[in-house]
Length: 305
Image 1 (tube, helix red, strand yellow):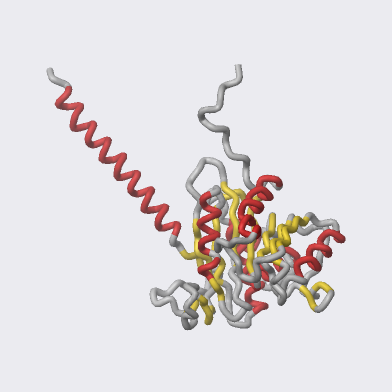
Image 2 (cartoon, rainbow, N blue to C red; image 1 turned 135 degrees about the vertical axis):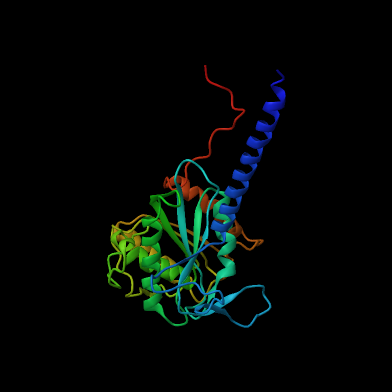
């Protein structure tokens, strides 16, 4: 009997199943990459996007500025799948609490993905809703930590990163994780909203004159913090060393990178200044604090015998 005739169809069937499975996984990853997570049970994502942010008139700089956010959410950017749980960062866009410049955070989310870190871009309530925004960042940390196993994340490596007003918001949850800003609404609120690490990029509103803003209560319990600012950011730079010194005096761990030039709002844009090295410095800090594991040894490395 010629068994090859029987084996051949089975081979093509198995190949078809394998291809279909791969395609399904790829589609699932694509859906996850563009998925939106609503923060509060009462809110639902409408197809028309009502309440989830209205773009302000274009300023001609290529950035989208969302305002009129009444239904806060997160946009999920998962890192490539691995067996080991990944760290995650919740990204808080800036915009003076009047709008959210999301297009400055999405490239950072994708950059983090390239280095094995999942990211969530937080769309918090605006305009001029600081109390609500504080609730939103607390809720966001709790959701990500509560659902960590679902997304293959390490619940002990959930951090926040914010720029400008988003840096202020990230610092608020870093220092005010023990402040009850709302009553629990579901099981997600049963976990801590304390970030495991914090990264502040050109943070705003950190000081009142020469003293730290009263919004912050610093202590040795605050998780490790990295601050990146430029000294020629005249309006907001003074708050960075004031906050850093307050953390040091309280016994909290803080690392700073203060550059001479770079201004405000530098994000990932290429610049001719040394400040453009901040992403590499951030990755090194992640490794130093065991947030990011050292890269595996090269495959062609000689075996030790």
